[in-house]
Amino acid sequence: MAELSEEKRRMYLEQIEELEKTLEKEKDSLRKTIESQDSKQ
Image 1 (tube, one colour):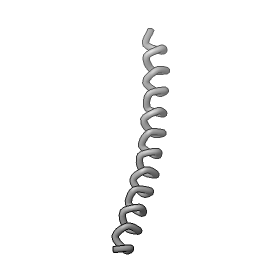
Image 2 (tube, rainbow, N blue to C red; image 1 turned 90 degrees about the vertical axis):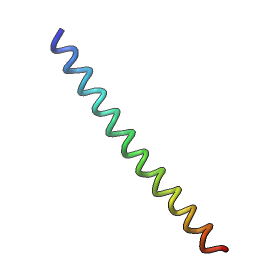
Image 3 (cartoon, rainbow, N blue to C red; image 1 turned 135 degrees about the vertical axis):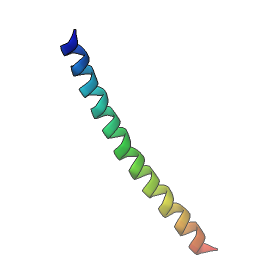
């Protein structure tokens, strides 16, 4: 039972890391969009 929870924990941590990477990309993309909009005005 303990092994299973360790396995799941590792799986969840990996998913969290993936989500964090995706969020960083999204944030960068949004920031660039905002900056390009600002420079047009």
